[in-house]
Length: 161
Image (cartoon, rainbow, N blue to C red; front, side, top):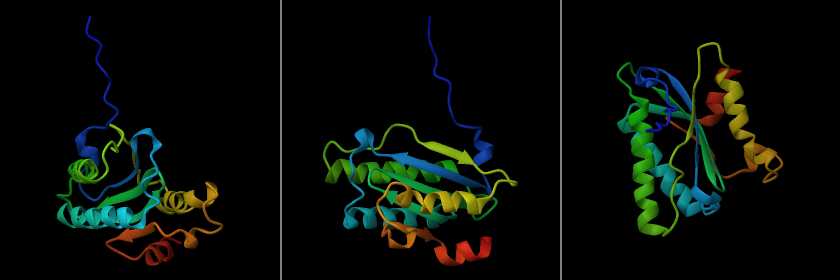
């Protein structure tokens, strides 16, 4: 008897166009690589490059010590968010294999396609307050590894209030 794993992804059409997805990507074995500003900047640079290539914006990202939270939005009807996510994991995974032996992403990641009635600001607040909840800083502004791509995080926050 063959046991098949049920895929946890929605059909691909849910990830197309001007849709928004909240993602959490974890480092395998909870290795805390994102405490190093140089590594975080390298990953931000790759995130920026791929977001532009795949016609995406990232209203918010937050590199926690052992995982990454981000929200990604398609900026055009032809945007395909799954290839963006796969490309980011592949490119950063390759970098990890060349620069940090034994460190890799967990195989899967958590994703949630935001529905129209869901509050983007609530998701953004959840993400930016993650370092506060974990006791890393007293206020999210103090955490150095939070930002946005394709816009200014402060502008995003003000436009959603």
